[in-house]
Length: 360
Length: 276
Image (spheres, each protein chain N blue to C red):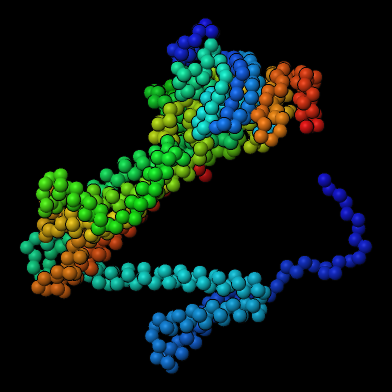
């Protein structure tokens, strides 16, 4: 295996490997960023540019400056690294701008609206000031709960079929294709489908009820649940299934007791994402769930207001005193965002709680 | 329980611990249309350890998996020929593969404890997953007996409620053995159980195999010929003629004979390291 090399006859030309090379200071990117912002700012002041032009010029200056500086001091590879790193940071900042500004504006406009009355009063007999979103809050929670109750069993069972039974069969291929097509259904079409379905079943061309909204939302939710649960079930190692089979456990019990518990944290996360995706849907609920000023706890009868529909009507049809209705719309928007954030938080907590533990 | 009856009910009802011999005749094993192992005839004696050796890809593991019908878990895999355990032909259409696997346990190459379960629950998995109702005292007995049987009791008795994934690799493998023997199978199949373990864990598992042989029929696949020589009474050598050709059983003899004076030249070439 090993051979002894003959002793070198001539000393090597370079006694040490060139491991050391010049580096820019750690603060170099920050320094360049500040300098670029300042330089672009001076230009902006002199030429009367707006904030966007200033930001774009600053970004370009930064890219050029850091690359040139790095190339001069370091080496071409380091320069490329700095260039791409800067690009990625800029992409991050660009992605954050709309998110932060949206949150900021909603909080700024909505935070002042939220008080005990806003959360516990409906809009019944309210003209102008006062009133609240209680009816819409209840409607949104009930309809979304209904959609979840419909979608999770169907979605989970579909994904179990796809992973455990169908695998690479033709039927499974078709189901995957159709689920992908379903992902692309415009939400208004889902709403019209639910409306047409129930209008025909009950022979009532003006039908409005909450469960119809749940059905419409579940059309949007099922494909997301199927896809995310499928990915999670695929991640469960085949070893565990075989270990279970080798103990004489039937396939269905293996799925229920071994595969699903192992994949549970991921499935919960997927379901929560699907809920977050549909909880803000407006169009289908506008059609089938309708809108009302009163609290309605019955999913199966009467119109039901939901937060997105409430926001839509408060802004488009604010009535006699538009400033109050618009204020309520901001408040409702903030509440909706907080609900989605709480749901995500809950999913993380549940995911942690159910995650397989290593005990270390 | 008389051997030779072709009665599935007797196979199912037989819950007392009785090691069984296995008769394999003219077994061809396929993956789809690919013939992986061809024409195996062998008799695996009861209450002894039989080692399967041979180069990679010669079908040892594939053959092992046909002994408890785990082979057919792979899509497209099928078997021709007969495997008879205690008078029951395993591939008879009336035989339920799930019942077969309850009688013929298996330990895999990589330790695979259930990640969502504690150490105790892992041991009880075979019983609990089959919905057997156990009293608390019974469950504790099974856990203690199985973990003692797998030589793990002293190391884990203070943390039975902790997750099985927290154990070291060797401990996990012994936990998997405890899990396999908790359901009191009649045959225990081991697919390279020590290949992922260090020498100390390997030695613990070999000791365990020595102890288990009094109660179980054990079939072990191994790449380690010293291990085969140490643990087994009989050794079967598998080989394949070339890439893409099916694997075959070349020779099966008492281990002493295989390692000192094998009948076939190929066996001697493999064992002495002059392979090919």
